[in-house]
Length: 239
Image (cartoon, rainbow, N blue to C red):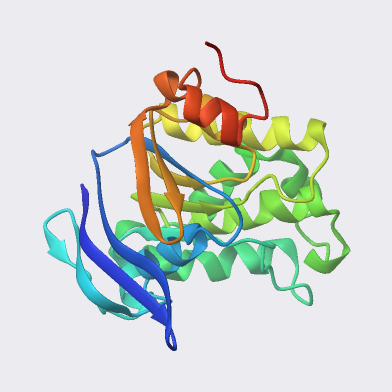
């Protein structure tokens, strides 16, 4: 479904993504873990069209996306839930969701039906549909950001640190919803500082350091991999 070959992206003279190769099948859930500054967010931004690659190739369902603007990538069904939510605080919950539907293009002509599905996933949003988004709690805003992306009828969902700044109860609610979406066949790339959570929620994982992929494998195997355990799960590696 998604194939990335030799992807390099820069901010000025700083290389943020350095020659990455990555592939995922339709409906697969993939984790990208690594320390702060490893290039994880930059990878998502390059896939979504927010960061123009310097080199390399991105294809999605057989279509070349390299260098295409973000709105064109979104209309192909790649939707991003950014770090920090980025909701429109001066708009209501419902208005935020309706804006998200603009990315659906020909995949959906029934925004009200799509909104009902979001409300079924996050009943709290239905209760607050007329409330200004800026008045929501951090966890509620994260749910809204995911719901807004779902209104765009994604074929691939990019999630950048969805647990950031949230309490354990809300994180659990968010990840239950994400796992439900994945069971329904939605593909995901999950960038998450909580490596244990990311590996539990996905099928395959990549480890990034300094813009490069340095390790990869099935998520279940990663959870007991000595290098991953030592560096990212906060435990002492076994003998």
